[in-house]
Each structure stands twice: as structure tokens, then as C-alpha cells.
Image (cartoon, rainbow, N blue to C red; front, side, top):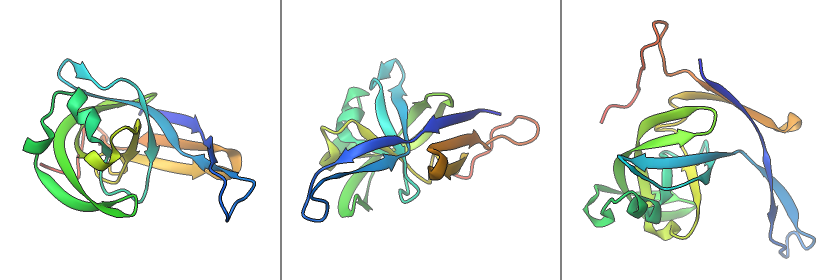
Length: 158
């Protein structure tokens, strides 16, 4: 069984009227890469986001894979609090310590320029058990997508 243990990443947040001296927020970040055939996006950070329905990424990562954003199937969804248009494609997601697997990924033009992905319910949490332990500064991700005989199971069929 594949298992990874990761430390939270403290991210410094901007000063604001609410936080005039600034503050830090712990983030459940992992190093990831997307690929399609021989093409790869290169490493970027992705956050394990229990509020995300899909594994979602900026559309410029789709372009790096040779995907034509305008020709991909679309759906509207809320992302980062705003309604946005997402385009979908099968790609391979690789996460440090966990390996790689195929996902039906969402891409959004509104997020271009950000090297940040969101690992959501479909494609990530339906495959892994994630244990968040903020008090000890770690989170653990365990692959639960295989049955007792080592066969892959999937809750999502495209």
C-alpha cells in the first residue's frame, strides 16, 4: 500500500485591515506534475482541498500538455468562491511519494499564471485516505484504491 507523510507548508498571507501585522496559514501542499503522452507540465504545488469537487488546474497547464482548451468538454462550477467555466480532459497526475494515475481533470482560464493545483474529491479523495494532523504539523495520504487482491478500484467511470 502506498503511503506518504508530508509536513504542512506555512504560507505568509498579506497584511490587511483584519491582520495589520500579517499572519501565516498552514497549507496541505504536495509537489505534483501533470502529463499527457510525452508532454509534461513540470513540477508545481497542489493543495489537498476537501472543498474541491474536482482536481483542478490553471488552463495554461492544459496548454503545456498540448490540449486545446476551447475544444474540451465544459462545465460551470464554483472555484475559489467565484463561478467559473472549467474544461475537462483525461490526464496523468503524479504526486511525490504516491506515484501517478489517470484523472479526469478540470482546467480554468481564470487561474492562468498560477502554478497551483487543487486536489479534489473526484480523482484524489475518492482514491486516498487523507489524515490531517495540524497540531503535529503533518498530514498523511494513504492509497485505498486497491482491493485485497491488489486490483485498482474506481468510484468514477467516465
